[in-house]
Image (cartoon, rainbow, N blue to C red; front, top):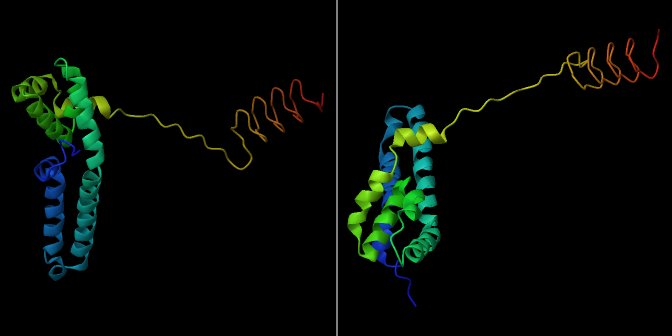
Length: 181
């Protein structure tokens, strides 16, 4: 049996952004940048590769789109559940899938309700793009600042620490094995 979403027109509709990126990539490639300089050709090559790569990824997600179409149709078969559409309202391809599912359910006017429930792009970016704190610990050759370093000069548990609290061979260590007092 043929899948209800597996028609040529629906394939074109759900992959509209992939076709757009494909055309943009071809347009970038056809621009005669070699007349300006080699650096323009290098920029063109990067632009073409990015456009074609993203276009290919969108085309490759066709099976996933079919699966998500079925999932949305099943979840909304008995009653209207707007919460099931929220994750699809974040990306352009997901919005196209939402429009198609609502049309097949016979209620395309509900898309306006879903659109009102969605957050603006700026708010989404603030919520999803959170700064991260990165801590980098640097140890010098002798491990002079290592808290638990093997050769830490002031290390708390340094094996050969000069003033290590529990250093194995600590020079002034409190519980060192070979203490010198």
